[in-house]
Length: 207
Image 1 (cartoon, rainbow, N blue to C red):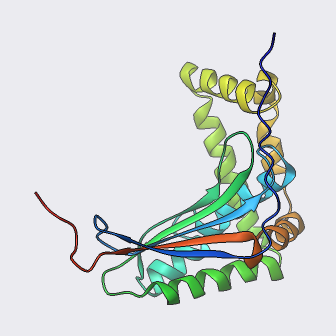
Image 2 (image 1 turned 90 degrees about the horizontal axis):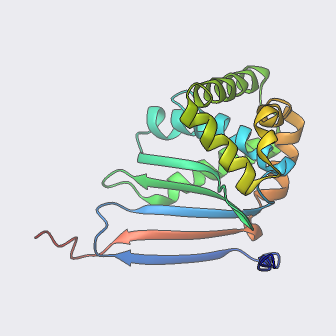
């Protein structure tokens, strides 16, 4: 008989969770933020994927301009939805430069997220994100291995291999209003968990 899938339901998070961890191997402080979000393949997934391109992908993205060009606060940044079965997280991670406090960086990120919730992204930003999506899909379908990986992914994680023929449109059809409304639903402080990883006072052991 066909094995049954486990129940992966998670109750809604009702309050923000925070923790500070000391890591003896860490060279620099880093912060991990996770927001609960709907499943892979949902309308919210595609809206948050397009939001990610505008918020954090590339040198012209909002966070890159603010945290790297304007202030040179961070060494690394990543953001975006998880892509697996079951409950999903929108994860944002950053590592700060030597001597930079994590609090001002978090405040700047929160301000940019609040902008996403308060006002629609510009037509120029949305068009650039759509061009990025098209470029990635064309590049991924340019080889037999890329096509095979796509077919396997859509069979395993979504509703079948034929999804390869229409998946790109789920991204391209996302509008500015949908991005803003999804951001408002997901980016709530009560819906997030935050872990701050700090180097230990002794520093990492080097052998």
